[in-house]
Image (cartoon, rainbow, N blue to C red; front, side):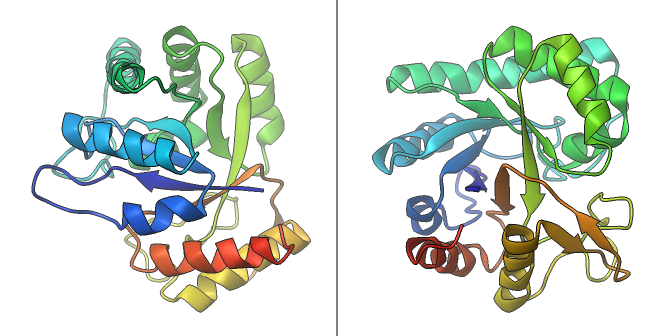
Length: 246
């Protein structure tokens, strides 16, 4: 299972995450595209860092929400969302082209990601935008119980998918991420994160916040780059995989 991390989420003089420490330990870097974090120089430097370590580059677009770090849902039209996504993907593709790199996949951020997993109309617009702006790039979606519906929509649109599980976030009983405003939504220790990773990779399940067990069939596992334990967890997982555990 490939390890992915949200990257390039600094902005100007403001630093977020420990990209230089985490990048050598991961397979996929989801790079912010300027709407929830990042700027052209940060994007350029993050692409260069990914290339240095042979890490796959992904676009990490969001709602236009710098103040809220992309965690606030926006009421917008399909036309607006389609344009916002095209703008962000185009920006990262241009920066990649300057460095002879390519965008390999797309993973929406924050509120946009959570919204598209519950609203098939929004997901359809996201899929259309990815297909039209970054042809051939798979879209990263949550590995949740109603994946057949999502697969059917992807087949209709003509786009590939990568299903994702989360190392550091709590799940609710429907298989979605628990709202960050709720106690326990984010695992508070590296030990708790590694326990969830072990359960996902060895048993193909997660335990929800209420104690229910859900099946999770994932292609990739996410570490949040802005989490306080991102560096420690990434390094631990790197050693874990080096010792023959997937």
